[in-house]
Image (cartoon, rainbow, N blue to C red; front, top):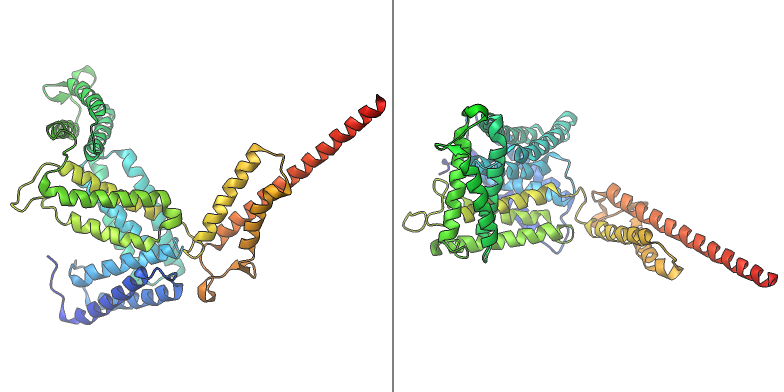
Length: 452
């Protein structure tokens, strides 16, 4: 439970709740694009409250009351607004990505199912995000309160990352291949358990591979060259036993009944969230507004909080079968949200339709150029028309948004536009060459007729 709110923090809480309500209203309004001026005003307002909060709090004490949870909501919404505006290289945009990484790392630590290749992408992404924050701090682009908040987020991620790396560091060289294969098998088993229908062939293949790995043990221990017992047996032993446990659960539940009836509502909700997020991964360039991810994150956190000691329980406090499936779906959803956040392009939602149209035109022109002519002016006319329409939308060489603002992503959109024009010119040139070749062939034919 969260701690009570101190008297001097109550005005701050009231102001922060008001900011959250205004951000929520911005997020819900699909009739208009999110305006940078509205987001900036709310950002300045929340930074002002954070500064006040820092003044009444002790730096050496850890706090967790309603002010902190409300501030977390506000910064998540603000961060997603910045991503929606295409301002992906600024401090506020980093917050939601850090929160997503921390969640995924926490779940990896809890499950103990990971290897070095799983950690590497997160290490790279944390380094990239830290560079963004450092640049903003050096240029004083954002207030110190914001950079301090993000530093605390980075520190939390670093602590979990070090813990994960320390766990792997004790793994002896001889056991690394076995450990990595067991991690992969476990993931495949849980993914199969979460799928509907029968998967006997796949399960049989994985069961046989598990038995082969298990046959390498002597008295329950893996041995190295010369019969020496490598260190870190516990990691591989617990993992192989867990794989067999999941295998038995799948068989016992007849594969199609993966979850107990008491956990079915949670399973159905997670399945629904996964399907929606997987669809967004496919269509995000056309249909995603980053602020939409807030609702998904909140839904997943509510489900996550239902767990007791890491397990979902029924009304009687029992732990029904199907835990692996629910945890797989939960972590899958967290992973999809992170994927969508990290793939967000530095283009404002106002320019996204133009960027998408240009991207499509560029792909079409590339295909036309690749397969070659002959072309006629009529063949190229539709592309010329689209590019002319997009060109006519510019004012003084720039795309202008609602209210006269200049949306983020001008450089990317202009690069797409210039590439399309270049491809179109190349096609026109090849069309001219084809006409010259045709004229030359006609002259040859007439000359041949004269000779005859």
